[in-house]
Length: 231
Image (cartoon, rainbow, N blue to C red; front, side):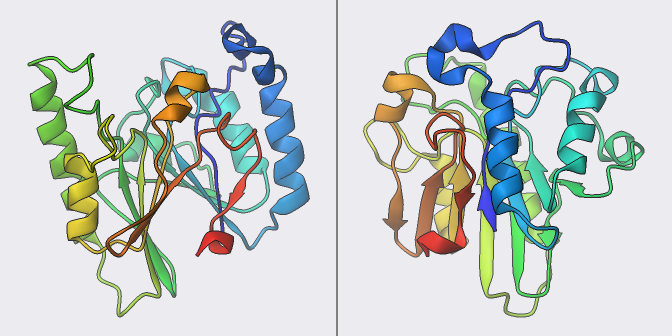
């Protein structure tokens, strides 16, 4: 089982990521190369958001087809830049056979279950505004719906995907992290934090019974993180 987020794919080549630094040069090709080296058809790849810069599902199709053709089964949750994200019915209509979209639901396997949602801005952050409270409330409902959607007999692992960090800037859990820990999730995988400033706010390790792991693409050097290895 592997994890990576923030692929920021752009089949139209209109949003080159190297404007954010030389480390982003050919980042997509580097991710694909590492993917092929590590992932087999039987593996799971967890992808908590910011998959494509596309603004519609039709525009995102080439990027999603690339992911679909990569080895393994992919479980994807929404990121703040996934403007192409729409209803499950529409996304399923594209028949991306190796991709499972998390949206008020969960991905169930024999010995593990994956939940997830986008999350939102941290409430102690400088960018948080009064109108963001409504979005936070809605995202908490979606995460709760995801947690309640799966009925699995004693899975070995319970995993949550969330795009935004589940921590406040000072390092304590935010409301999403608190909810994840309240449900005694084994592993929480998140992304979103980029560059030197963003990486300063990365927090990983055990909080209670939950292990938190950041898989933002530039944080993991554009290489898939082996999740089982860190248990």
